[in-house]
Image (cartoon, rainbow, N blue to C red; front, side):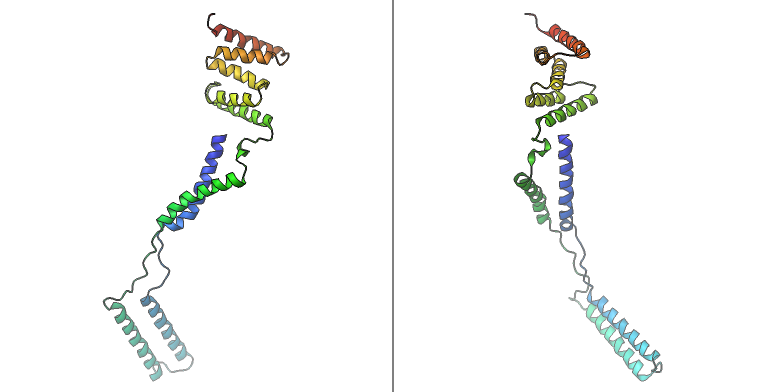
Length: 228
């Protein structure tokens, strides 16, 4: 469960950093329009004004209309000549350079600052709440049982370590002692299994099913003990 929580935290951190860093590492074109395009748009608008004026009453092909069109034509030619002149830049603005240095700094700074703020202002112990040791023990045993079930009902390895943590919090927890005795047998630690079973028996009477299980486990532990 703890590993899953940390994986979720890591995924969220990567997503947050990516959201911040992506605009810095990608190249984006400038939004500025080049001079030639702007000039042609202005001349086109002027021609539309002339045509609208003729439609409002001025006779088509009149001297005023011809002169206005000639002025527009001369302006177009002048702008085209200026745009084509050597040494004049008329292409679109260069693409903005990606700021990779800032992106690297953010990739390091954001997780570090987030962790520092969490340690300072948050509750790092919330992964295993400290308010109730009983709740922690139950969660540790549930996690151990889940891992063991996925591994063929074997309690050695990580399940055994989780059970030991549970016993450290509650040495007289009956379920933890049962699990600890079985885990010790799975790890071929017969003396430890016997000690856990004896401690369990000292906590009080066992019911019929528990008695049968106790006798079976104790017989197995004693049979594995080295000869005196």
